[in-house]
Length: 314
Length: 314
Image 1 (tube, rainbow over the protein chains, first blue to last red):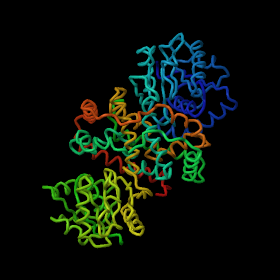
Image 2: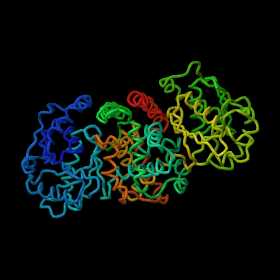
Image 3: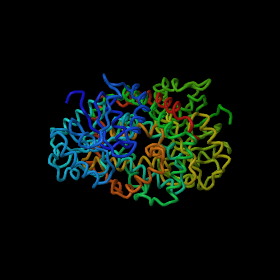
Image 4: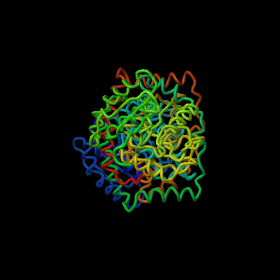
């Protein structure tokens, strides 16, 4: 693929719109389809809102919001696309039906990436005519800023297509993490989910408020994880002997009952606690304003990570 | 307490030395005691190494590395101290014996903070003459930069002393999180441990390398958690409806088998995988150089968090 491709985006919710922002900023031609009323207006508003941050991150040559076209059928959207990103609701029946249509109308060598967080590529490929070019390509919100995308092939995935997909996502300034085995929830969501479950337990048991749980991450581990993740963080905590010393000293704590092993029941009470905690923490600031602040912050933080930790191989 | 106190630091390993760096940078007089050979030299080297970063963070008036004194007995260290920070090895018998000596020799109203990650304040207070001033004050590595300190009282803790302790830690530019109930591992370590267990499973099962697991955090959730923690991050991911929508849409995923529920066995194989993963990721760069880079990064990141997310109430 050249640096300029025609990219089709199917489904324009939060994730689909995030992809559109990234694709446009990276100089791609984007054709979008979503059957929902008002979808085009919502997408154009989102892209306009975040464009100043995308400019700060750096636009590709020729990047323009005008290179977005909305069309009224899936067939029109995918027929000329080099690359197709599917972001329809997270239900197996809906995903499979949409992927079947894509399979029928797309060029045979167009790559199809699904943003699914919970369905495997092997499942998505079942019954397709060209299953070899279908992969999971799972991004993180906000997609137009966060560089991580998890790529997972299914049983039918063609290695060459996976390489092409990886090169494409790299060309739009992403960090593709190719996951070698299919596993429910992929990798990043499993890590997040583990922390999230324990956080819910702590709130449920009245140990902390949601705001306090957030602070326990922000002012401690979160600052380190943003730079080097959990493993290298512990490597540095082990002194000159690194991880070797760390595992000797703290390995046994793994067996302590420090974490609840099961997910808590999402009772009405727990739900309300969590919702009220977040609403009160956010105060009167509308979500859109919080998003602007988050985006400005992330753009600067990404620069920092790049300056101080550029040697990551993925 | 005034802004200048005499602070005793008992035990000068990684955590004790981290405290010393912070106390000195915040203009405190520090008296240290550690029976290990060469302890004073190691401490002075660590403090000198990190001092440039502490200057960037901002030194308090009169702050000086010269305000550190090493003494040769615990009694000498604590007798004139307003505040005592205990950092001896994480074993209940050692901690209790040291705390009994501190209790005998310290001024009755000196506050005693223990850096323990895994022992409760109630346990530490047992049998002491002045248990009301003993609290858990659990910091995070590197202590001279990361602002989080978890404060947990025991059954005997005096509310007035807890308030004094909180004010003291705030005065040295920390974010004290007062935890209302005693719980094993406190809060932040439980959250970290949950993620850590799952990360170990993913490595153990051959899904990712340690470096890939780190990347899955760095380029995705880590960037967001450093700013707003897990709850507010999800609040923003829910769109205009915030956490309410988030829980409706993704709540059911809690019940999916996305995370291993038990800690993995730390087999020799898994240990080696983790150690080699970290060593290969770090390459030829010595740990001390990685630490310098980490520190420079964290100082800038803290400025960013302060600029973009100053309204946290803790």
